[in-house]
Length: 542
Ligand SMILES: Cc1cc2nc3c(=O)[nH]c(=O)nc-3n(C[C@H](O)[C@H](O)[C@H](O)COP(=O)(O)OP(=O)(O)OC[C@H]3O[C@@H](n4cnc5c(N)ncnc54)[C@H](O)[C@@H]3O)c2cc1C
Image (cartoon, helix red, strand yellow):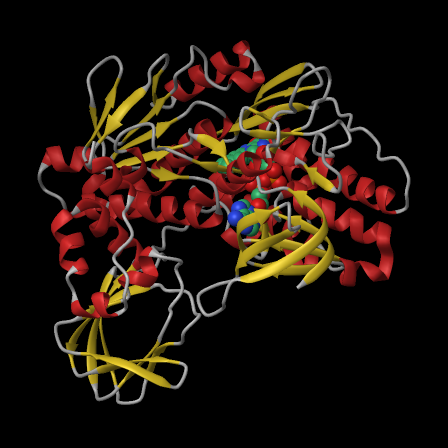
């Protein structure tokens, strides 16, 4: 696929860039511009905490990119690599599709940032995050699920553990999420008969001396006081040092027994951007790609960046704050600048004065710092709602949110537990004779062990060999380039045990015995390749 302009990322910066670029280019833009995003939605992240708190429906906070950016070609897929020298990127479009190569002349980078919790032992495995709609739904379901289980639990210690919720991070997403969790618990506790006299605990842990450093000390103190009055425990100047499924450990004080931990810390540069900046030698500032004020990547032609992944200098600072407010405005100007440069005109520098910050702290209260003025309590909450309603894209969504907010004033929150059970990592499956398990060239998703029957492997039409009961296959593709090299078909009715790619990698990295067993496997040997060494193996030699 070849496009003149590719916008990588469909968040605030990317979606608004696509919209303004398509307006500038007119009808031709659908042929010339592609917007690539991992999901086909623009997520209004500032409202995710309300989805987690069961106040808003998930559909209220998302906008389909195809409707929002009608004038551009939206390509749903995950960018796995960007090759600037060849001016192309590689796109993983999904489970049943081969990786696609997209060539471009202009590239706009708006991939945002990622969450990396790996610095705190136990945090990646044992804490929830809040970055997308799926995370918000998971948090909502987890809180409700804890109440359901605790309602049946008779051991007071276990019940206490189940009903302790720890939120790590005292920035706006941590404070807003902790406020929403508290609101949800308070509002719905009455429906759990056995929990009436049982205390619920919400603990907010922050490494700094005041909450909400974004809105200034006095409002941070106000938020702290109000949250404490509502019964929230707040630990300031405290860092989480590690966690297990049962306990959270700190650099000071006693550990806390908690079944649910939400981490709102750990923002990190996007791995695709890290890889690109290393390989192409791009200048970075705190992991963000350094641009000119026009959002052209420093020293590069036809390469642009904006939003959280870019360091766009503004108001004498080397990088604008990583907020939706800046990303959206940068995106809009960036679209216009790309159009200007296509017409041979000079792009314009980005200017924007921070209009302020706001955070809702639950129970119809908020804190806000707007154009240097500070507001708190109900009036700030009302302003918070008005501003966000105004910013939310689409009249239909605005109306829905207005209705949901109004309902929340009069009715209790909905505690239906909707999240489907997670997909099994190891599954048994039955197949009839002649079923194709996968075709050569498709992405490899599982490792298989044959429990009954027979599987034949083919290279094109050429029969390669059979896999017999007790043998396994798939490791070469999973450990290599991630693509099946042969096609596999059942030669008779068969039962397979499939192990997901993620579970397979975990076993592979953890167990030398497991790795050894794969290397001596006849199927593996016959495919003519020893298993490539992993990071774990390479380290083991030292
Ligand atoms: C819970 C939460 C609350 C927040 N609250 C506020 C707030 O109150 N006020 C405020 O101003 N800011 C807030 N923010 C910050 C704000 O949302 C971000 O600064 C803003 O979204 C950045 O916009 P962006 O376009 O740079 O990145 P994002 O909006 O993160 O968009 C990145 C895009 O890239 C796509 N993408 C990522 N990786 C790939 C890949 N490999 N291939 C293809 N596509 C990919 C994503 O799907 C997404 O479409 C909040 C953030 C969070 C998480």
